[in-house]
Length: 465
Image 1 (cartoon, rainbow, N blue to C red):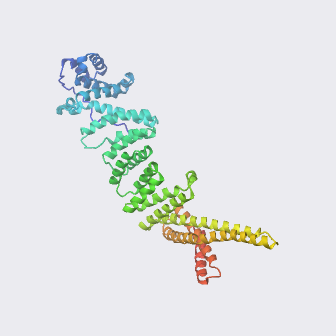
Image 2 (image 1 turned 45 degrees about the vertical axis):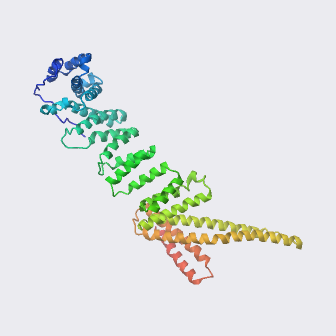
Image 3 (image 1 turned 120 degrees about the vertical axis):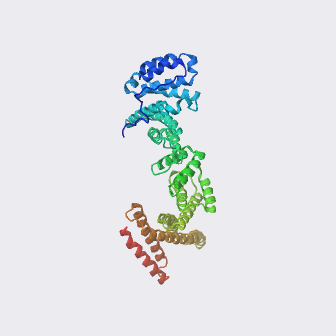
């Protein structure tokens, strides 16, 4: 990128300024003659006069002279800090002349605004140099001088383009702040684009940064303001649901999330994408270290909420095979848990039978047999109670894994996630039908043949994916 160039060029022709006071005559003459160092000496002397420092014109002259020193690379090195002095002088001028009356004379507007341009361009080019050297603090501070002047340039439409914001300076300052981990400053700068409702693919990341920072700082007011603007500027982008869920996750308890889900579900305001995101939030709560703190009933509650969300996502958009897959997976996990319990009970029953003592005394034998029956009946009853929820879980799993399979197989098979889900779907479907087949073996020939055919179908597909 080439150096930023001036909006206005300092004219070689002498301007016939009419100084408002004789105290500025020598400064005016030296300035017109481009004798900026001599002009500096004169303005510095004038600054010791309290009458002079009360005048807006004094500070404007100080701005003009020091901005010229700042613009000259040679003089900038000689007079360290001249850029800061120029900016501070202009701020003093602004306080005394907030309407910029003294720099807005129509006959010489371009010339009068020249100091702003000098500060703007010089600061930007210095900031860019620091930026290339990855000196983020120095880069940010330099760019912010340009941002300050850019605001005034835009406000007064000096470039004649009716811009809402000085894009270049603000964007570079934001980048420098972001790279330098100055998150609050970066967000504040990006907010300028959002406040001006500037869109387009080049500015979407600005909105994302604001939302992520709002989530991190748990600033609900800011988040709600900018998520609304983001959805307005990019109305067809479902990605905003992801950031909204991130904010919800960062700022609410699981019980609050469930309450919010129930409220929005009842109101019919949830998109298919939002259903999936809630499903993920509920299911993730049952995993990892935090899950160790949960009792079994709470885990079941969260899993059921996740299933409900995934199913509603698929029902709202039947192209979302991953939603159906997640519902099927959770149902399959339920089946596995019930099956493990059933198998453990069966092993316990076998253990009791193997270790049944042989008692010859009739009286003792009757009491022992009664106790043995009591123990075995308890296990048999436990397994009988497991039969219904276990079959419900496996039937639900089959239903949703088949929906997932039929949807995903029409999708992008070069996608790793899609292929993994397809491979798992056919594996678990084969396992499920094998289980159902074995349950009816020797009891129902028609059902056996049906389940056997389904098992063979899905088992044969495993190697395909």
